[in-house]
Image (cartoon, helix red, strand yellow):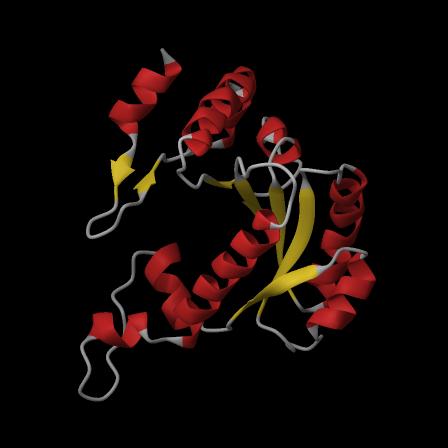
Length: 198
């Protein structure tokens, strides 16, 4: 039943092969979803087994009702953080907890936003005890296109869409996707899902 419902409620993204399942909108809803994570994990594994990449944005760690089974049973968990001292310190305990669950078929990596603002990826990896997969370029204006639905900026004679497509921000995200695919391809098990935390 869940697999059938999922097909009806996912939202296709225009001009792409991507569909999105929107998550809960409030903490009250999140608490009621605890019993859904295990059945949803089964459905997502079936989708991945059919050759479709599955990426889950599991949100902030530790909130009531957060998608723990989707995190612990993924092939790759990405811990997203800035390179500032407060961000690294706040992520350190979670990095340790996630890394303790790492095993064959389940990897944990960090992704930094804004490399060298002020710390380099190597410094972040040493502080967290988790390897850094890569970085997302620091570009709040470009990030707002995804995060807030903002219109892409225009630069020179190019259209806003062309400017956004050629941005360092979008290139860095595409590069992370490629690194994740290569990392998972080297693993002995078939990828099921990729999970990110911010």
